[in-house]
Length: 450
Image 1: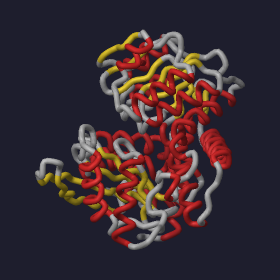
Image 2 (image 1 turned 90 degrees about the vertical axis):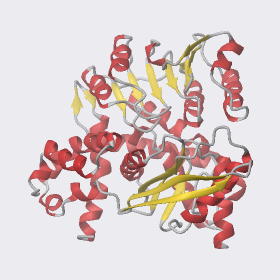
Image 3 (image 1 turned 60 degrees about the horizontal axis):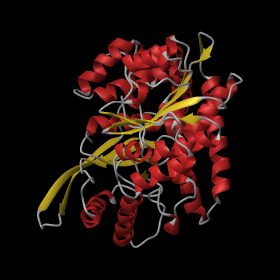
Image 4 (image 1 turned 180 degrees about the vertical axis):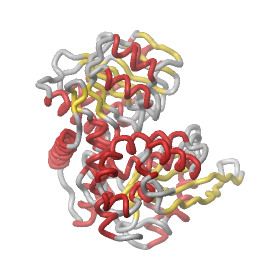
């Protein structure tokens, strides 16, 4: 394949799919970026000579290993784990760890690829990575989760470090898991270092980290609305998910004046037409984070509708924040939302909208904030946690929140700067992809053929 062939999207994608078979999520993520940046590639002799597209879509390395642990019945169990260190051109690898039965290499490659450009957008010196295991923490005792985390870190610690690779939490990896992981790292290495982010406040964590992804998504949505002279007052929002991102997105939406009427989990969604108030949100947070209950219990307690096995996209609203998982919002959902008058969508989860859904939103002139921009708040505050760890200081919640708002505002400005207008609406997908890509590509060119 010649360098000119890499300037043809179809030819490039054919080659990528051949090299990476049976990885549809990775193909989807790459195709979205390639469509946005191909005009830049065609115009840049330096990028073509350096084969940037071929190199930037290939991980620096993939580490795969077995994790052997013992359950409470004394049975020896084995899981598979990975760390995909995708690109460290602008800083140490940075990206979460995910524990879920669905975790596979395809998922982690797409997430690591997205993370590379998301981290670039923050303006902080962080490369892109992702990792995790097909271990399912649901139904496991604290002791079992501890033994698994200790076993996993026994191998993972060889490949990470504050100047090498700094993992964080993700789906299935919260404060409990991060505590176990960090404790084992500290025991094995006899050093206290900022090798994980999302840690507890008592051992090097950052104020505001827990809220950062959800709050950041709403801050980005705020910038999108403000750019067209609008705001949250009087608007109804639908949110999917009831995990960390969704709960804090709802929290910030309420604070800024929106009415939120949905939340969901894997069993279905609730529709509360009266709105999820601050008191109801506190109850829901206790349900999901302490009792680890099901969303249907909210409907039973507050006497509202529960839609089993469905997602909330049929509920009429002005704003939507998909905060659950990838590809949860499809083309049919998008058309329903458009017909119901949706005005803006901000992705709180990673790639929650299918390609066809995104195209439909663009054609309809709906404001659309892609995940690599809208949900960058989490990794942004992780980067701030790294800075605090390195300096041996701790900023206040207010200081962190002010920095987060500035970062999300800056990301929005970068998206606008590098975008095109689509029916008079900013193309945030193109803006985010181009802005994130240029910084990484320029660094790769500067290093030469490595």
